[in-house]
Image (cartoon, rainbow, N blue to C red; front, side, top):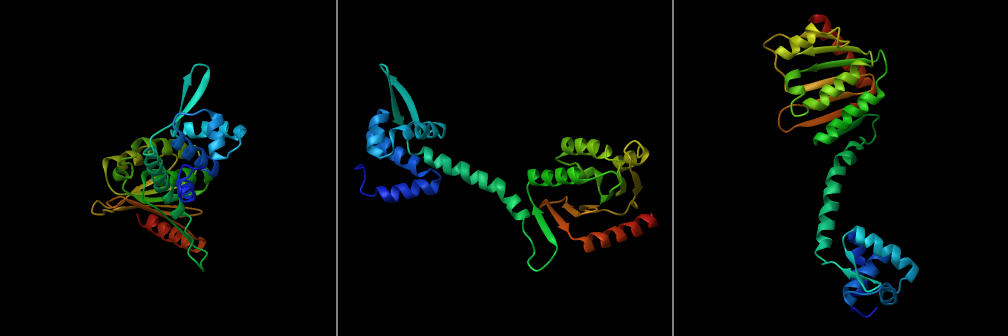
Length: 250
């Protein structure tokens, strides 16, 4: 390839962006040749012609090459390199969407306790989806919270969650701050397959807590919104004991 004295550096940069070795070579060749036939791109890039077809198709999907027809021949034209910036932005967005899940894998070194942290709506919803998938009939499901804020911003999701949770026939006990919604839950508690008690009217909380057989979910419902999941048998058992003491009090 003769299109650049810095071809090796350019190839490495393109590979770091996310292109494969062959994609990098073919795209650089296409840039240097302009509109060209596959045979010319293959020769210039030193990539086998039979391979170039698949590589070009991949580059087309990435928006880096487009096809034109001249007569009865396919001509391939490179797109502006600024498209690479868009690819980087897309990858950066994917990374930030993935970051909460990576954080959730954090394991405290030297401890059997696992603490997971979430600060995005989708990350939080994934926590509740996991809880729902693991719960079995008669499992403990203890809640301390404010139902008015519990559903804030996620009302549709949590209404669906509650419907699915009801089908599980759990040992569900809810200690809720006083509100019209809490009273409604208490009034229809048999329909929801749960027991509901109302906390004194002067009690206000800014964190909802769920205790199951496997984990504790602490959901801060004021800014900054965040959810912390603790998975440790000793801590879970202690919180269950404390919850039951509080339950008996009210």
